[in-house]
Length: 273
Image 1 (tube, rainbow, N blue to C red):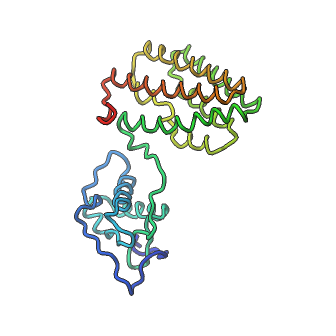
Image 2 (tube, one colour):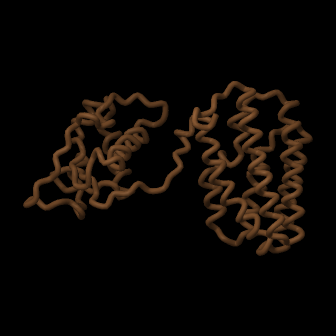
Image 3 (cartoon, helix red, strand yellow):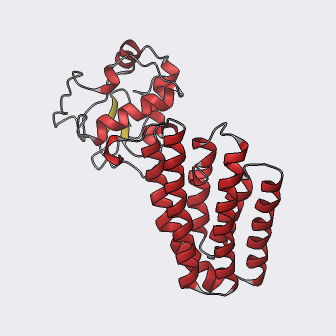
């Protein structure tokens, strides 16, 4: 059974009404598909782009399974998995024996596509987003943290200290520190967001790579000084100081990584230069 066959045709124009015609010209899905990431994910990304840009209008029929296979060179399984993923995101609906169509109210769900964060500018975008959330998280943690929360945050701080002494970049320990603060807000959405962006919370593993240990140690000590100021503000139960300390830490961190990237020859986006 092909993707044209599954049931579930809500939102599709009835046979009495003509379906919008879509020309394959200009659609990104009609380009050979050679992707560094998973082929299914790449096909989903292309179809999503065509839908959200309006190239595939609401009610328009998606290219057939055979057309996509011929145009992209992928297998039937890849096409079916891609269409299933779009159905799960409510971007398309299918009608048995007819095909798959763009949903009438198709909206792209919020997602940070970590596989596509290929430039320093992309990384900075995520850092700016998390800055806004983590500043408020620090303030809420200062107001709401239990004694056990403070002990956990302090323990994470100590774990970073020990990692630095071992000349370890302390990526996991640093992530745990920020997650502990998010937990202390008593709002699970903060922790969910950090879990969602995962390793991009701590960008030095992306920017530094194999940077000389002496350079890493120097900068890690600076990070840790800022972490200490955050912990002190949380222990003092001062929401304003906690927010200010977190802001300094994240803004300074962004600036440091931009500088380190330039030193390493990593090019920034022109708009940010």
